[in-house]
Each structure stands twice: as C-alpha cells, then as structure tokens.
Length: 497
Image (cartoon, rainbow, N blue to C red):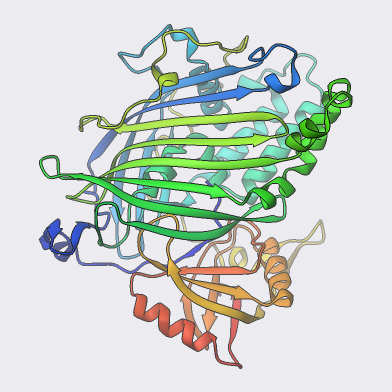
C-alpha cells in the first residue's frame, strides 16, 4: 500500500454526478465515488499465495506451496467533505460461512488472527482521499505502544521462553518501519482498502467499451526506480445491474526490475550454493532475471462509483522463484460476476507444514482501537516543524527550493482523471529526497510561485525526483505546467507552519 504520488482533490457536486445519464452518445459515464456515509458494507475476501521454488530442487513441484485465507470484513464511511473521507474498517479473522475445503487449509486466517493480536486491535479508522485511497491512520501511537509491550514482555505479558535477541531485534525493526510509515499498518491489516480504491475515481469519467488508456510511472525498489506501464480498458457494461467492468494490466520494466532484485538473487544463490555451482550458462542467466506483473478486474457501480467486486493476480519471479498472489473481493449485497481463480475454491491444496500457535491476548475485551469514533487531535506546532535528531533533541527541517526539469499533464495511472507529473533536476531530486527522508510522518506544503497547491503528509522518502499532483480540473493542471516551464520557475517545499 506505499505511494510516491502527491494528491489533491476538489469536491464535485453529487447531484451533478447522479443527474448525468450513465449511457450517452460519447460512451459510458462512470460517476465519481460517492458512498453513503453511515452505511455499513460487508465484503467477502478470499486470498491465496502460491510459491514455487522447484527450480532449486531436483523434483519439479517439490516446493510449490499454497497458503490461502477467507475473511468477512466490514467498512463504514463515517464522514465525507471536500477534502476526503473518514472510514472505519471492522476486522475479523473468523472463517465466513460456506467456504470450500477443510478449515485447516485456510492458514492465512490463523496468521491474521495473530496479526490482530500483535497489533492489539480489531478495528481501524483511517482518513482517505476521495478515491478511497488511505492517507492517514488514527491510533498509531496506541498500536506502536502495544507492539513495544509485546516485544518487551512477550504476548499476553508472558515472556517467551528462550526468545533470542535477534528475534526481538526483528520485532523492533518492524516497529521502526511502522513509525516511519504508519500506513504499513493499513497495508498489513486492510489491503482490501487499496484494491477497492483502484477502481474508484474522484470525478466522473466517460469511456467507450474496448477503449484503452496507457500511462507509466516509476516505483522505488530498494533505491532503484522501476518504470511501470499501466493499461486501463473498459471491458463491458451491464444496463440491468448498472455496473461497468474495467481491467487494469501493469508490467514492470524487466531490466530495471531485474537490477533492483540483484541483492535478493545473490542471497538466494548463497542459500543454494551447491545447486548454484552446477547451473548452466542459460540457467544462470535466467536466475539473474526478474519480472513483475499485475492483472486486475473491477466491477464498478454506475450509481455511486464504488467498487462492488475486484479480482487481482500479482506475479513476481526472482532468482528462479515465482510468487503469485490472488485476491478476490465481493461486496456481499451484490451478486458476483467475476470468475474466481481455481486456487481459491479448490477442495485440496498442497499447503506448507505450518504449526501456527495462537498468540495469547492480554485483554479479553475490545481491542485498543475498537472504540475510536472521532478524528485524532491535530498535531502540535512542534510536531509539524521538527523531527528527532539522535539524542540531542529536535532539529528544524529547512524548506527546500527545487528546480524543475519538465512538467507534463498525464493520465492518472491508478485511477481515472489527470495528474501533473513534475520532474526535478538531478540536484533538486537529491535535495528533495533528503527533505522527505527527514520529514517522514510530517505534513508539508508545496508552493508554486508562492501559492500553496498541496499539503501532503510524507509517508516514505521520495526518490526519483518526481512530484505528482492530482486534480480534477485539467485546465488548472495545464496552467501549473505552463508556469513551471518558465526559466525562473521554482518550487518551494516546506513543513506546514
């Protein structure tokens, strides 16, 4: 769930969206996402991970294993305004009724139950943009404090016998990552939120059946920028159900992705040193190649623009190992229309021999975040203007002035609409990376010609020298692009006062 994109959204009048016919001479109009606040929606979620390491073993398929899970999660939009929404997810590790296959083949449910115990909650409240993309999380301090208690004292307050320092160090590494980017909690506990948001747009979009739209962006993998090409297609519509089916195909640049995976490939070859010695030249070349692709189908409501069903397959091959993940989400009040992959309905699976002990819970009542219902208090001025500097107290983060190499209005890659893609000069890209590294977790401001255009919270250091601004008004974006092409054009980025 981590994005390098900077988002700004403008409120559109709901009545205008709903009064526009879904079908017109120009094609099919998919409305902007306008969920009804206060209405709880239940989603049935099925997942599976397939891992194939048979390349490294004598018998093909000997190490092809599958782990799957089935869940029923509930979501309520608590409030909505012109800037975004406040959403509550109620989480459960219980198997829903009517699952296929024996319950012990759903090992993800046991792992997820332990995750809820470790995080100390069965509910999350998050702020999202108008697409439904998570952008902030309530109760991060309580979650981190609970995890620190678990790390120090053991689950349920009982220290684990023989717990090693290395294991404790690993737990604290996870905690540090969560503190640096709290949205990793959302990615761990509610990845469904991001997948549903993929099919939702903050403004109405008219498309024709069979029409495709291709865009590209860079994703960061261990400091290596990997170009990713995305292709959207309107596959079909259903006038009776008032739905549209969209597909999204994404492909990472093979050369760049392979470069980003070389350390992982080297570690894998070290682990199979004897086998690696006997590889042929062709096999060795194959092992050093890596690839990643994503295929998504989405059924979107033509009434309120919400995603009713989603099916996603992500395939990554690195060092002779293939990992394929499957996810299917269906809103329970709507009939299913997308075919389920066989792995999600199979009665028998080749599952790994996992012995998963449930973590003891320190409290029998609701989780520490289960009673959240109000927005968190606004950050103090000191939180907005300083970051910790070792043990010597806080230090100020100075604003940075950035020079622009290019500015272009492009189609948004992860949803409908347009974006302004700003490419910084190499020197400014380095300054921007240093600034965002120091400002992780802080709310910032981006100014063009002394005018504030966005106020994003920095979730992760931004590499690659790109700033992306989303805005429904393409004319406004084009005006910004023209301003930034002037020789004296500069951007100022600072912490929000």
